[in-house]
Length: 136
Ligand SMILES: [Zn+2]
Image (cartoon, rainbow, N blue to C red; front, side):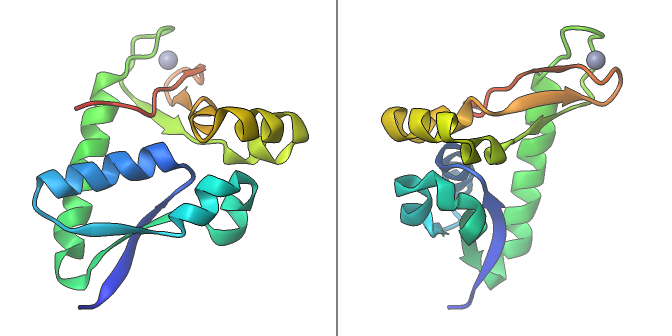
């Protein structure tokens, strides 16, 4: 079977949410470079994140599902400043590059990276803490 790169994720939590959602839809997938990223998050940028791989035949369907999930996640988030749903979860894995976050990540594990997510509001520019772990 031919596998193609569907999407890459800066952290373990987001990659596993996506994989779980695809599994529920009956689409098999696997994560490439998962171990590299989880053991040494500083390498995340070097290897290009955790890669979600799906079979070529199911790639389009999988992409549709993830796009739908993304829209649902957006609709579930409201900007506390202006009430807009026009927000996006922005990952900032680069913060792991400074030594303080690197240490925190080292001691707390990959969940520390998830806290680097912020929601950005496109209507008023407000940024507020994001939740990577959305149980739809
Ligand atoms: Zn706003």
